[in-house]
Length: 496
Ligand code: HEC
Ligand code: HEC
Ligand code: HEC
Ligand code: HEC
Image (tube, rainbow, N blue to C red; front, top):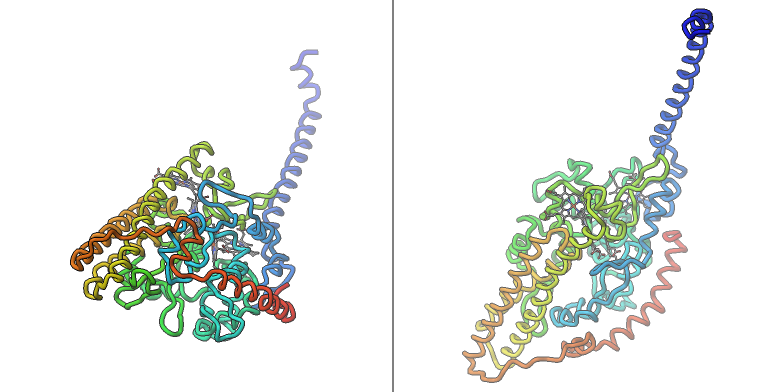
């Protein structure tokens, strides 16, 4: 039978088959659409499927974890300590041992006792309790730090601020809250539990914005993906006797703007024990420097590289394992750059290597300037003669610290960081020239002595630190006081 004849003979049957077939296809498509909508609904109800109701400031992240297991499981990975890039990583690194010059630069300040590279958020509380910088306060009177020192370590901080008042919190002594501040940086530091939006829990950031005439509550979602971090990863100081945590941004965010602020309010962190210069300690202006770099200027936020999306089936969520973005380049840099892993690593290392070259030179010259100033004092220089030296030392070291204390800066804002360091090098030399002028006025013919500070131990001895005594007291504190704090925290259900 010819095809045409066949069609004519079975026309009606064929039409019915086509009709029935269409119905089946439409039905199947409908099913698929329904299942997709259901998936969407599943994602939408992620927030509504809360297993526990979180009220007030809940500092125990384990409780939030019941509602948001994926974010919780990645957050917990900040405990890991196995990643190492060329210059950073999440391991424990004793920086003073690697660069003993820093001991001399911080003579008279707690950082000369002990300074290690940052590691994961999970260690924030443990590290501030164990560092020699917080001393060994067995009693309230023995404290060397105010409670303000806890400010960037734990969600217990906003909880306590709500309980005792912001001013009272800062005014207290560090050890008064040892049994209260026990949970490391967690959910309540960054989130509002009702809608999981980014919430600014630290008053210092909101207040700094207000003084600049900006309302932080009007920031965009993308801005908040950086502002969450700007609660802690910034320059700050403890203002006045109340040790009120303050960000010095009133005149702007460059190293020069903040220096002007500190000079005008007459703030000094400490007097250098060798040179007697009135010093500033830069904290970690990560946010400020990042904002001056190429990525921020293209609209990126911290979370774009440090909290990349991760997917699990149909669910996409933010990786809460905050670490070096070089640990998973495929999910960070490569989402935007079509470039090989090798090339991307090379870009980062090239910026870092070039900047660290200048940094190392600055450290050598700054040390010489402090040692020279001490020599001039020893030879009978007057305060008036030394005034220009001390001013230059303050300015030179502020710039060095500003560029170095921000661990990501050489990648975040390479040009700005190199600029600041070059001014630091210039001012370190100028300080040495001034020292030589003073020595000439005094008629001193001898050379400035060169101390042996080739190891951390030698450098600490040179600046007059009694390390065995400091360490002994700390060991006793860790063995006796810390377990007491933890037991009390467990008893009060502050710690799970
Ligand atoms: C250092 C700040 C910070 C901490 C700590 C933090 N988050 Fe987040 N979280 C963020 C940021 C930033 C985003 C992305 C927000 C956006 O893009 O709007 C986010 C997003 C989320 C979201 C939305 C869905 C997603 O994954 O993008 C949930 C849910 C969430 N976090 C849960 C948690 C939980 C649970 C904890 C504690 C275990 C926690 N977060 C700790 C900063 C933080
Ligand atoms: C509540 C204060 C606080 C907030 C908020 C915060 N950080 Fe941190 N961050 C710290 C402290 C403190 C450390 C050092 C912890 C240590 O070494 O014990 C740190 C360490 C880090 C490290 C080093 C980790 C490593 O493995 O070496 C990175 C990266 C980092 N933070 C990025 C961020 C980003 C990005 C954000 C915002 C999404 C953020 N942090 C928000 C306080 C904070
Ligand atoms: C374009 C990607 C990118 C963005 C955006 C970004 N960073 Fe980084 N960050 C990096 C890289 C790359 C490093 C260097 C990591 C290394 O050397 O292993 C780094 C390093 C760091 C470090 C030091 C990590 C360590 O192991 O010691 C901190 C802290 C940090 N960044 C915080 C921030 C904060 C806070 C922001 C936002 C204000 C931010 N970053 C924005 C890419 C980024
Ligand atoms: C969310 C997108 C995004 C991510 C993630 C990202 N970048 Fe970029 N990056 C950009 C944009 C946009 C520019 C500007 C490009 C231009 O103007 O050609 C840029 C510029 C750069 C530049 C040139 C900087 C300059 O001086 O102008 C380098 C190098 C670079 N990125 C490296 C990296 C590395 C390494 C990472 C991962 C740690 C990374 N980027 C992550 C978007 C991104």
